[in-house]
Image (tube, rainbow, N blue to C red; front, top):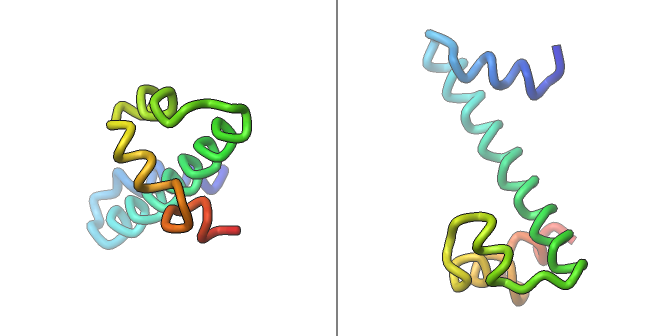
Length: 77
């Protein structure tokens, strides 16, 4: 089973310690994937509004999270 599939399975565990660790790991994975795709979109010329629409958040929220040197995109480089 892949690591991601195992995490998804563990997230449904009856053991709270297993389930909560899996949820945390999945949250980290989602955050990294989102940052990667936001960077991909920006590299392809997408506006903050277009990205925000796809993520179902406000333009201001996505801009604050990822623009300027404060967001995840700038810290991971």
